[in-house]
Length: 203
Image 1: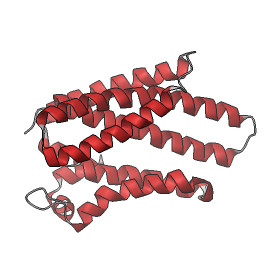
Image 2: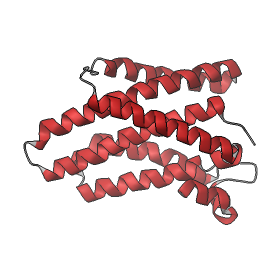
Image 3: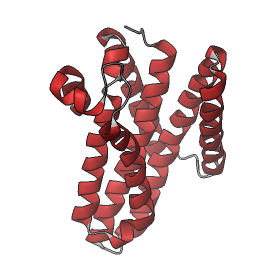
Image 4: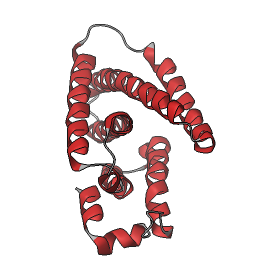
């Protein structure tokens, strides 16, 4: 919703992006602030109240909307909608499988995290190489890695919740739900973006 609003409202869009599409000072803040919020929640969630954690989560979602608003300017509406529903279907199926499977997915964790680190390195390297072939490879690997993380994270969230629910700590359970939502949100957004890079039609 925020992404559509920023993309379709010129007066708001100009606050974050110049006419050439380059981020303004506020645009750069909006782009990097979500990363700061992820680190803040990841390392400091136990020091925050549940209300503060929720506020940070919704702030993160809104700021991601600002960052992703350029997607609506770069790609056709049809390809965005098609990719969104494909990503949503894949995400839903993988998450359901992760929730219901009897197979222990815990061994996937280290492998998938290493994959994410490798993706980040490849993305940085390709900023200088500007290789379209490497773009395709990275996007394909990104889809597979975040597909795996969707199933892994769902099972991990479920097991952690069941393990601690017996203690009846409602504050912990509330914050645990927020952190679980954040992890799955990251999985979905990344899967969607990599799919869009692979199959999206540019304006």
